[in-house]
Amino acid sequence: MEKIVLPADFLWGSSTASYQVEGASHEGGRGECIWDTFARKPGAVYAGENGDVACDQYHRYAEDIALMAELGLKSYRFSIAWPRIIPAGTGKVNPEGIAYYRKLCEELHKNDIHTCATIYHWDLPQPLEDAGGWADRSVLGAFEEYAKVCYKELGDVVDMWITINEPYCVAYLGYLFGAHAPGQRDLQKALAAVHHVNMAHGIAVKEHRNAGLKTPIGITWNPVTPRPATKSDADKKAAELSRAFNTEIFMFPVLGKGYPKLLAQETNCSIPIKDGDLETIAQPIDFLGVNFYNESPAAADDSAPFKFSMKPSWQEVTAMNWPFTPGGLERQLEWIAEVSKGAFGKAELPIYITENGCACDDTVTADGRVHDSQRVRYLYQHLMACANVIKKGVPLKGYYVWSLLDNFEWAFGYTKRFGIIHVDFKTMKRTPKDSAFFLRDTIAGYGEL
Ligand code: FCB
Image (cartoon, rainbow, N blue to C red; front, top):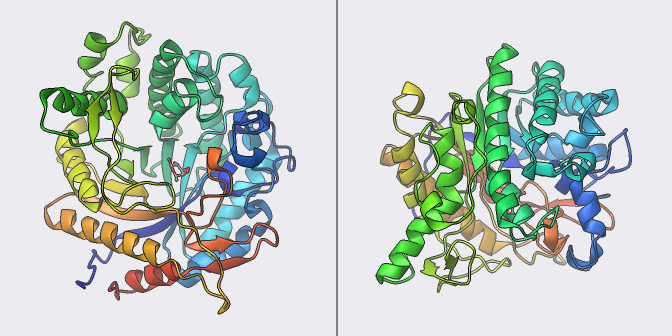
């Protein structure tokens, strides 16, 4: 099959998040976060699992970085755990937490690996949730304080910053569908959370500039830009609603386009905007981060909170039951390039895929290897989609595979393995899968199937 050809300066990376890989939850002065609490709630996480140990990256980071270097990965996207930096959410800063991320970044740099830090990937300190969490505006002062500490203490070792990972999941999975911490189901709170997460992004960008940092800063979304399930008018409307509520509500205010009009027309709830908020959110940023896993068609559904739901598709599915839709990635990247054209007076904004990958039922076989051929095919097809859109002029500058390691997959616990490196959670042994070697060879210029 055709060879994958990507630009020589393409940024190849792998992604993880603190709660999913670090472990050491009760070490190094770390405070409690909403996922510690949520995981203790009966039935919230598969088999009552939690991130207490996870991949133990807190102790094994050097081994993980050596593996990244062997694979030729050029960047590592990790997240900073807020409860390690400011254990109670506000107030006292924890020097041990800072020391951990400094060591991590220094080790990466020693191996010529660029550092990309996400400031918030879902581990909100529990005391802040007790005060209302993302649904309460008071979270913004705490977030500003936290972001300032990150810049002051780690600004010299982080090469690229991401403010927030997937605002959609923070607001909706956390406060509307109850599937993620803090497990709430309340539309008005969810819409308040949407606005506060958007605000937190803007505040983090402002403080990054105030700190005088010259490193690039952006945000990571998981945009949903589906086709209608059928050609009926109702399904066409459903596709529009889904783009508005799942994507534009987060993306448009950041790009300076305000909240989508459909919002006010379709719900009785409102977003608690104050004077000056839209300006705060729309701080000029340097790049856009996109997490893409799949695209499902949208259909009208009166029983759903926003009157649409996503339908199953006919494509091959992964262990998450998520379809293979590399064409959806192409369409989505073209759409994002189009809507972000001219934002902040720039001709175009660089785009990075900050997560892409799939879960498979991987096992180490008698030959000591992991033959994850489905993941190899998935990566091949999505990287081919990247090469195709670059040819069409989309300013795509890099790709981070999700994930470096099998890890704690939120409410699914350890059952869903997304890594290109297998982790035996009893022994913590790391075994690179076939997909890791495929990626290594693709980075080296041999991206063929
Ligand atoms: C994304 C999350 C990431 C991981 C993948 C599978 O929504 O950002 O932490 O769980 O899904």
